[in-house]
Length: 258
Image (cartoon, rainbow, N blue to C red; front, side, top):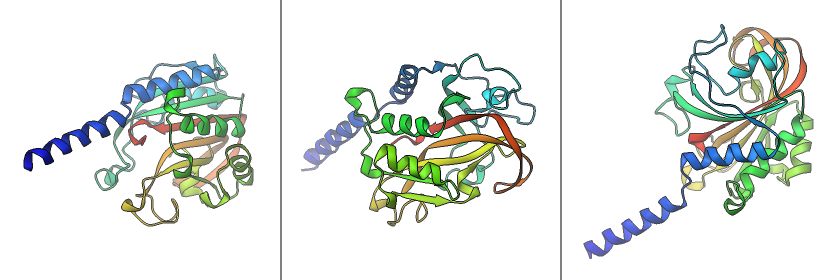
């Protein structure tokens, strides 16, 4: 009996392993998808930030800050990358949750004055829900939830219009959760996050507002359109003006991908 049980367990582990997508496949599908949408594939930059206000590359957008702020003219309208990152701002959370890490790879797609909210939402939904056989990640749409900044009516309407996500699975949050910045003066903007429901075994019903252990953020769409200064905390800063162009900066945490 023990031998049969061990064999059954090995068979189950092989089955689960065969269903999991390896990291190389996740990143390949990412790059292939966005190149097919007219993006230029850009190699990962150094972990040491080129921006003088940051010690490390903390997000996929850091190498593109000169383009997002229009200090330099971008050599392309659309870009995609898989950026190696180090982030220490929430290091105290590492090991306590299933979603925090110090080193990670950030899959990103970027628009420099080209497309904005609607196409960013369309691209994200298409890649996540397209079947594996057709080049996507094959996630079940019914397990995806969305958050938007509490004042961003436009983003909510675009989700409803373009994806079919029901209104009850779109939740509004404040600046601390849905207004992205690097923690330093620079470009910022309201964002829309996509969460994956791991199921009732991991926590209570009610979406990301109720339980961020059950509902894990996998992708953040940042509508980068403002310049901020005097950053006092994550949700306390001064919006000092608009950026010269409306940009898109998104990030999918490769290690969080279900």
